[in-house]
Length: 335
Ligand code: CO
Ligand code: ZN
Image (cartoon, rainbow, N blue to C red):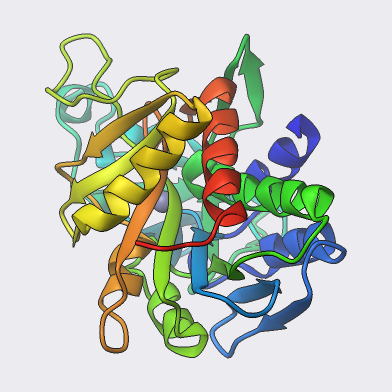
């Protein structure tokens, strides 16, 4: 599974440009799904089983990034806008990759003056793409993602795009285990959706939910933790197990969905914790408010340093999430 994690988190895929990630996942799930389609926005929709309650499981393929929006004349410097929730305090000295392989370095004016203590506004930063020979390989309108290679420290896994490639891994691994365990017919009709454009406002999951028309929705995504030094008060910690969402800024999970997940975790002896997130939301909010309304919840992977190049998860939590999802989907999905 580590090879798959590395391949997916190092893949290039800012919101709206998920095609490389989609091809990796499509190859990975080719033998695990009964039907695979790509919808007009680029969501990869994989059906497993037929008949019974319809459950949509969504993990997003896109990651945050930047897009060049102005080239400073004869300088090799680009101005840029954000794709998704880019934090200004994380930018100076960081590298971005454009799709054509060009590495950009982010700088800010007055780095040893005002920018040393106060993050400038986003439009004051620039990306250096100069090659020393006056060539300009990047054009206005080209998107880029932040770049760091994947690293491991014990059971900690560190990457620029745990959000949400680790959710994609949980989905793929669950598909693999369902396939392996499939002796008799699955009790549910499952739609594993690898969604586009979550980071810019759940723009993929909502239309995908329209076409799937599920009875229940589950999002797989990272969530923040409250276990950092001088932490905000949040009752989620790294290594604390699969995290069952109760509430975030876009979603109140119906109690029946929370109980469905909690009961499964307790019946199967899976470590779990409850999530109340005070900033951010995920695909479940898009699914829940689609069509005439779909009861939806989320299984979250605890993650430190979300939306930085060092998003850190624990592989024990990843395993707990896979076990919880596999348990939920192997039994009739009744709320
Ligand atoms: Co995110
Ligand atoms: Zn996410």
